[in-house]
Amino acid sequence: MRRLTYILLLTLASLLAVACSRSETPTPDAAKIVLVTGATGTQGGAVARELVDRGYAVRGLTRNPDSERATALTELGIEVVKGDFDDATSLNAAMEGVYGVFAVTNYWEHGFDREVAHGKQLVDAAEKAGIKHFVFTSVAGADAGTGLPHFESKAEIEVYLVDSGLDYTILRPVEFLDNLRYLRDEIMSGRFVDPRDAGKGHQWIAARDIGFFVGEAFDYPDIWVGVTEEIAGVEMTLAEFVAALSEVTGVNVQYIQIDWDDYEIALGAEMSDMVRWFDNEGYSVDVEGLRSRYPGLMTVQDYLLTAGWNDR
Image (cartoon, rainbow, N blue to C red; front, side, top):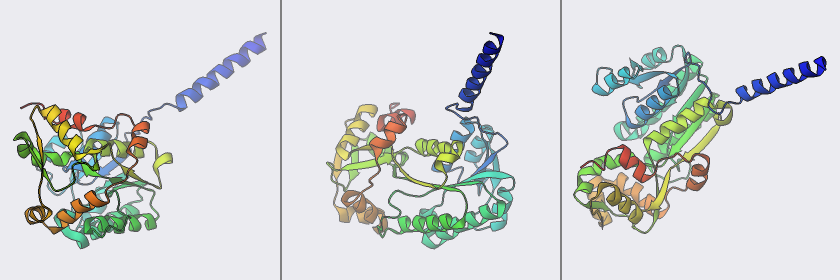
């Protein structure tokens, strides 16, 4: 009887140990530093905040550590360091003692050649530093042969990263909900101006959700290393999108479809080409599948409310 009781106690202890080892939310090792590039920008800032919330030690890379945005990161406990993608020495210094890197590059500021050079420079520095996990944010459709320069530049960086031998995760987001902030005055005046067909479906994602996916990649490397994932949280027609704007803001927002030539004159050929691609081909992320796996992804309404669009 005593032997049976002893065996039962050992079995119970073993089951408890297994249950604890299968905790749904892993506890990150705070000693594992993650370097976040572009930490004062839209994606980098969202990633930095997400990783802090998950318990990581975060080092934010920026060209201007004295800016207001950098100061705000410091107040969250993020170590802000100065670095420049054109300066390999600064990247080497920033990666000292670092476990993982989140990398975002900027075509619109630097152009095709410099963006590709920056991406390769980051990969080279990560290899030199012995980085264990490199997460790169690209763009959905990067490998679709769109001919769009700012898609092709990301594709070139992706190939370089995959060939590097680093343990990597590539995330490919779609159009950002956060870009609505540039249209806020116009929308609040009751106008949403766009050349696309209002009846066609389009896809969006909030930067906060990009941060979420980066956090998942670092939390679960066994699942995410070697993975390229296209990510989106919202799929709806532009007519539905404008209706959501009206719903949250309380403004009767009207969809105004302008001529493509006028749009190109206003925003330039490359932006016009991209939006034409949205209208004709468009992103094809399995949004329903992603939302079934991650039901907390933001809707348009979620994003607008979080950003205070209901406060007029």
